[in-house]
Length: 287
Image (tube, rainbow, N blue to C red; front, side, top):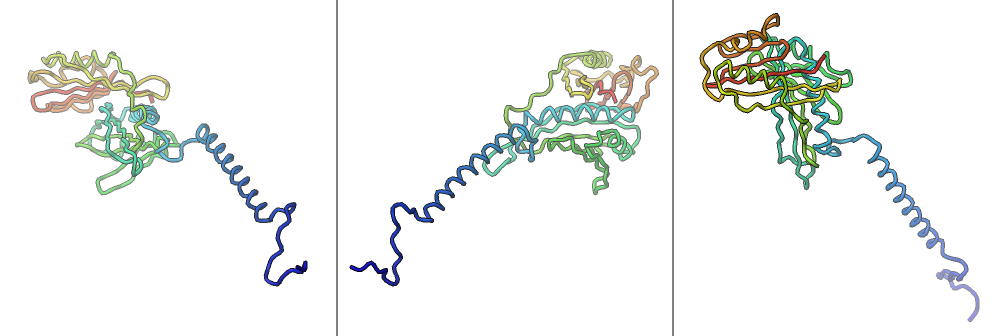
């Protein structure tokens, strides 16, 4: 057989000359491995050093302290323009973080009683006193003026009118992984609890259990609200009768048969509900 190359056939590769295709394949495998190592390294660094870019990266137990601090700031932002009281927190379950993962939302709030019905003015004053990076503002809506702000780490702040002369400020996480779950700040009995029990006794009701709600203050202290209600019916005396000493020299925002609000040494809210009297005594954060 002659050594001529037949037309239409490629010459065979010699053993000491690997095909360029094989060389390219080896480079491709090496590049893929290098990229995977680099990507893993960047991911490791990001998880440990970068802030979260979506709220799904922060579980409820991690977002909880942000909410607590925001509640404290809101009590301070109310200032002398109203009487604040922290309301019990809510955890709403059943939302979906992803199509395959359940989550929960933490919502905390502060109710505020104002003198008169100028809710927008209070909301604007609160917005003006919040940190600049919260980007707080008040806008009109079909349901009335709304305060909106961003407390950081995807925690939303909102303020709306409630019942007549009342505003509800809320702080919410949105749907999050539950993680270890939300743990509220420790709440020991204090001067607010003693004041609430004293009021119940003056109204002639038994001193029932007192619920204490706490939030963190910017200066490192705590805002506290003690909530209680009479175990028996009221005696019919005015609500203000329980706070004669506390009201001395301090402004009383409301004083009627059904509601009483005082901004003194404590913030005091009292109201008649059917045959019971409820009271909330609050020490807000300092402005």
